[in-house]
Image (cartoon, rainbow, N blue to C red; front, side, top):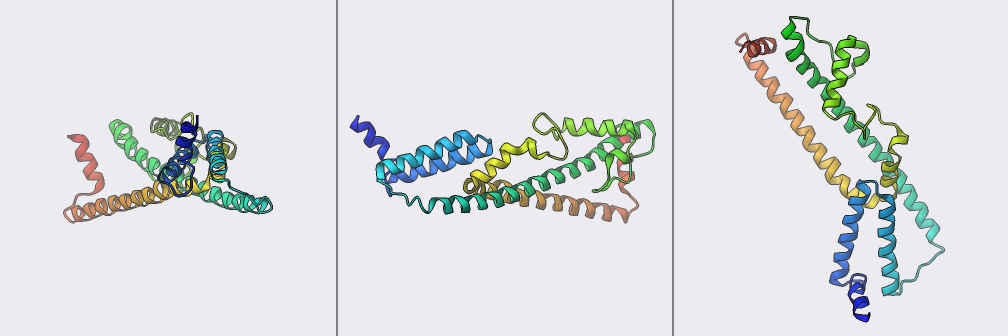
Length: 229
């Protein structure tokens, strides 16, 4: 029994090699659990870790400072949850805007041109698709974004509802130290890569259209020639 306690105690003794391994494991587990909104298991993990620290290191807590600590932690959690919510909304809105553009291109090529009908035009970033399209076109657009998994069981609405994301918001607020670490890589680095890729695509495609416009080939001619192939 003493050997078992010594083995587990090595993970909780300050400064030891296994202590740092345990810290990394707990932090990694907290990141994974918070990302999957497993708040109960995350709470159990953190509670078990701090219980071990107190048991094997004879920690003493100044309970008079605990309310101030909790208050500060709560404020930072609310700030972090708000930042994450705004980031989440912006990423989802950008994805929706990209899907609108992709649908217009797909619909014009596969449905409208084959039938010799007028193309769908005038679709911009701020276009209200319901008001701008016919019922047939709008049904096609809705089917398209569902097929692209933009609307599914997890994301039932284009504009997310707060009550459907309560678990996610609570995770952001409760486990914000782990959320900050994960967000740095998942939101900002990946988001920056997506923005750079989108900008490069627009620049290269625009450059190609400009050069070929000098020899009398427009983007519309390009699509017509492709469809005749």
